[in-house]
Image (cartoon, rainbow, N blue to C red; front, side, top):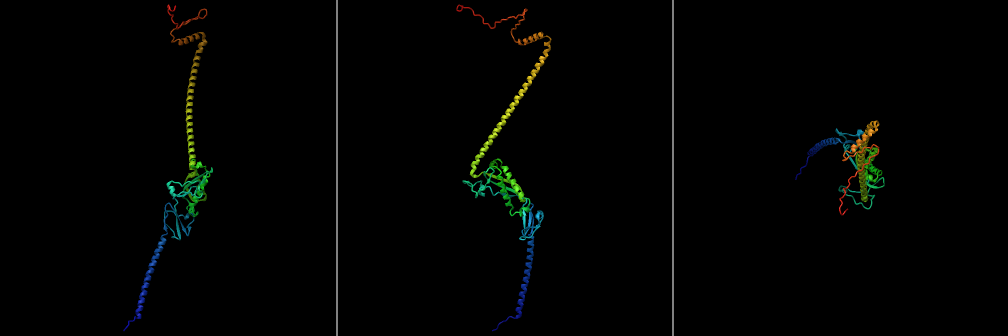
Length: 358
C-alpha cells in the first residue's frame, strides 16, 4: 500500500498566492474607503450651505454662542451662507416680518377649546373657584373676567432671541400685568359697556410701555380685549345694562323733545318778532303821514281859522252824509239862538175807530 505526500515547494506557492490576493483585496478596500471618506467629507461640508428667506434673518450659533457681535451676527436674504454642520454650528432663523401672537393667561374662568368652539360656558356654580377661575378687580371693587390677544412683530432679533430665555413668555407676562393693572383703573360699567375701547387702549398702552422698558425687541401691532361679567351675576349685570339702556333712551327722548320745543319756540318767537316789527313799521309810517297831513293844514288854519273850520266841517259832513238818503241842514238863526228840530221817525199809523173800539 502506497501514500502520496505534499511537497514543501507546492505549499509555499499556495501561501504566496493567498497573501497576494489578500493584499490586492485590502488595497482595493482602502481605495474604496478613501473615496467614501472624501465623499462623506464633501457631503459633510456641503450640508453647511443655507439660504435665508426674504422675511427672515438668521444667526449662526457656534457651540451655543452667536458668531459675530450685534447686528453683524445677523445674516440677511440675498446670498448663500455657510456654517459648520451640527453639532458644531446651529443656524437659527428668525421670522422678523411674521406676526407673533400671545394670549393672556390670567383673568378668565376655566374653559376648554371645545367649549370655545361651541360658544359654551362651564356651569357657573354657587361662587367663583379661585383654584380654577381667574378674574380681575375693577376700580370700584367689582369682579370681572377679562382676557386679551396681543399681536406683535420682532424688531430686534438679537435681543429677542438671546437676551431672554423665553421672549414670548416675557411678552405674555407683560400682557397679564397690563390686564390686571388697567382693570384696577377702570370702573366695571366702563369696562363692560360705556368705555370698552378706552379700556382696550389702556391695556395696549400699558403692555407697550412694559415692552419698551424691558427692551423686548418687539413692536406691538394690535391688542384685542374681551371682558364679561361673572357668570354667577350675569342676570344682575343684564338688569343693570337694561336699566342703563332705558336711562339713555329716556335722556335721548328728553333731549329730542327739548330740541323740538326750543325749535318751535324759536320759530314762534321769530314770527312774533317779525309781525311786531312789521306793525311797528306800519304804525310809524301812519303816524308820519298824519303828521305831514296836519303840518300841511296848519298854514290854512293860521290864515283864517273860521273859514278853515267851515271848510273842514263841510268836507267832513260830505264824507259822513255820502250815503244818507235825507239831508237836512239848519243854518244858524239871525238872533244867534239855536233852532229846534223835531223828527217823528217810524211812527205807526193810527188805527181806524170801530164800534168795538170807540
